[in-house]
Length: 54
Ligand code: F3S
Figure 1 (cartoon, rainbow, N blue to C red):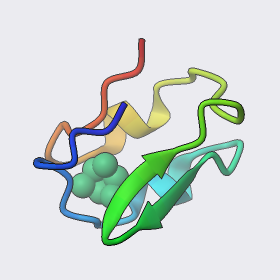
Figure 2: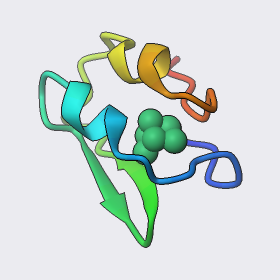
Figure 3: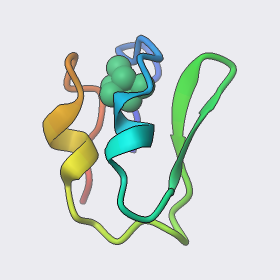
């Protein structure tokens, strides 16, 4: 999930996602849980550690 208070909308996660599961909505990242393959790429690239994949 994305911590919307932390996310700065840099879009790095949208580019790194191998399955195109993340979009920027209202300036914040939003993950489509149906598309997420839990690779943790977004978690690792986020500069403000706004994403936690369980
Ligand atoms: Fe940027 Fe995505 Fe983090 S938009 S701030 S890498 S949640």
